[in-house]
Amino acid sequence: MSIYVILRINYTTDVSTSDSSQNNFFSDLIIAGISNAVLGAIFYSLWGGNLGHKIMGLIVISSVDGKIKKDATAGAIREGIKAIFSYFLIPSIWLLWDDDNQNLYDKIVKTYVVKNKT
Image 1 (cartoon, helix red, strand yellow):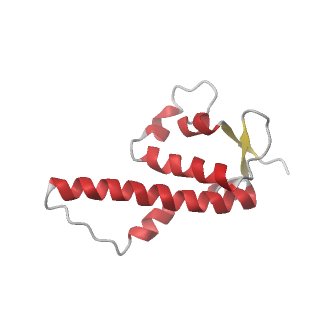
Image 2 (cartoon, rainbow, N blue to C red):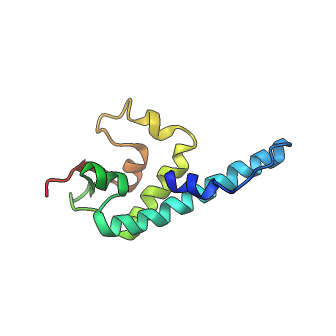
Image 3 (cartoon, rainbow, N blue to C red):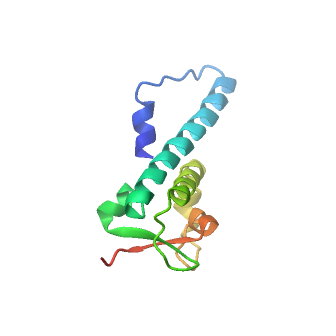
């Protein structure tokens, strides 16, 4: 969500009423989802994962056929869902009970994150 933080630097919010606070939550959710989806589309087509995956030597593969996910659409969907779910703490706690060590968004888009062997 780091690009989201960069986009929010000059963005001010009015939290004087609960209505504006709720509107800010939904606009923040949309901005985070879209910005991460755009970056996911770019990075997945280049590296088969996001910038953090590249730095840590990881890649995202399909849980169906084991091929690297170098698809912009798959990257956009995975990163957009991850950004939206992070507002609800789902990614942070899902791994505690998943037997396959997949996050909820990994299950939705049918992916695994694995160590890059190349």
